[in-house]
Length: 118
Picture 1 (cartoon, rainbow, N blue to C red):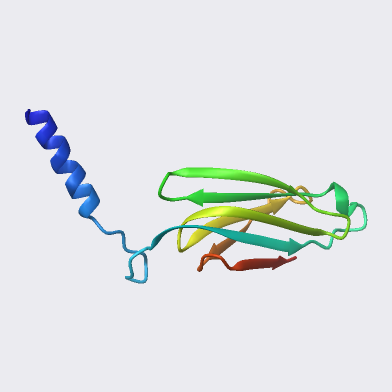
Picture 2 (cartoon, one colour):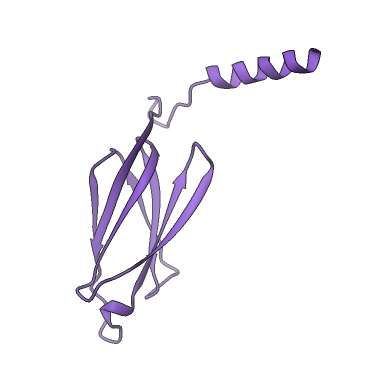
């Protein structure tokens, strides 16, 4: 009985807390989708259709970090549709041309397209 009371109290305390970001506003939890697209201009030694863009998406609610490998088409373009949990998401992006250089993107709205040209 005591254990269940303590568990319920902790659960209630956890659910009543509100996460606040660095600007002082609350983070909105949403269920939606977003899209990221871009264009890569590869060096001469690479063919466009052999380039892979790795997009890493952090999901703060579930605690998951998912990696998507997206192939670049013959014109150097890539596109990924993905699910989001919060209004603001953090995305990491790098390619097999230079995997040591990661480009971070902070999306600020849901159901809008983020374009990346590099």
